Image: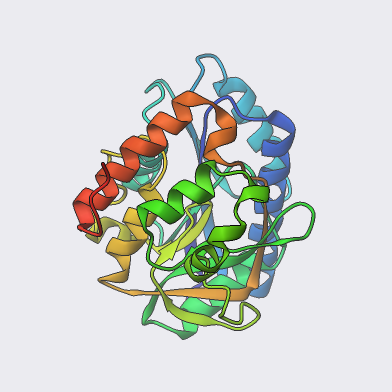
Amino acid sequence: MAPASLSLAIVTHAPDERLLARTLACAAEAVAFARERGTLGEATLFLVDNGPEGLAPMLASLAEAALARAPGTALAVLTGHGNVGFGRGHNLAIAQSKSDFHLILNPDVEMAREALHEALAWLGAHPETGVITPSVHSPAGEREYLVKGEPTPGVLFVRGFVPRFLRGPFRRQLDAYELRHLDWNEVQSPVTYASGCFLLCRRALLEQVQGFDPGYFLYFEDFDLTLRLSKVTTLAYLPQVRIVHHGGRAASKGLRHMAWFYASARRFFSAHRHANVA
């Protein structure tokens, strides 16, 4: 059997250049490692430039420097469309991809060198699995619980906007939502809700569910996507697929992000009939 082909897509908007360079370098090293192990053949990196205008040359330069670690990897910089949001940006790359597998990747993620190999090996051995979500840690080494249980408006509000030192009364609900009772050193399959910072998918399945819902500008688009994918395939959490995530909370990003968060929450709960968000 020929090694799998892969497309990787990163959507950027005013990115931190140093962090993006590290993300790209780690991705290139993971591509090279998977090729060495025989699980990966052709690979294409899509950089989706959501602005501001004029960043495309910088993005191309960073990517070309990183891809020197993985010779033969194709590069496509998609630019000129403006800031269309996270999900619609990824849809631009998905529409152009012809690979067996497609990786949705944040510009603030450092994947371990063996991450792609481990994920592709699992997918090759488990045809019933369509999506892989990884083990995630913060830069300080703390585990992040990015596979979630059933969301509720109350829990999401506390996680998004209540300072950590005030969350004590909500600890039981938060722990249940973050599925802390599960052993995250073991494979967990199936799972339903997973972060979009790293999702390795069978590309045909992304086409089947028509990719991200373009009605989300930012926030909840990953929950919506993984919920829809869970209805047509199995999502698996693999502890051997490791990443470091440099992330932030919506509340720390100002009122505009809070407004996007609220609008996306309304859309999500309305679409999936979990609850009414007033």
